Length: 111
Image (cartoon, rainbow, N blue to C red):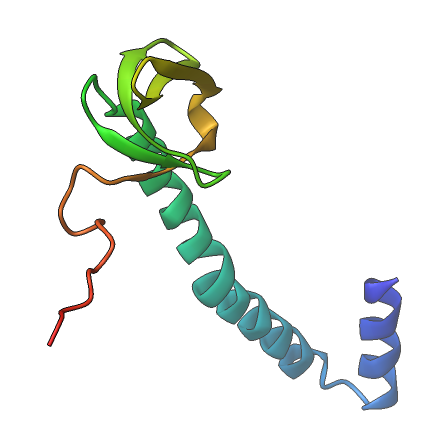
């Protein structure tokens, strides 16, 4: 469908199809630079974070559960939530590693 629209537009303009293809190429390049590339970079960073999880790390799940990792398996993680309460969750549900101080929530200063 897009090919027929491009061909019809090129025929109507009398042979300026080269500029049409250049514009189409520029649009695709801009979409890749501003949408696809950053998303892939973010996904890769998230995957590296999940693969580097170890016992004792403080994490937050996609459901908003804060806990400390008690055990790490290939696809699952056992999280100690409170006291003796432990939850087994999929590694892909881990959203943040709170062990790193740069990821920790900011506390408000009291005056």
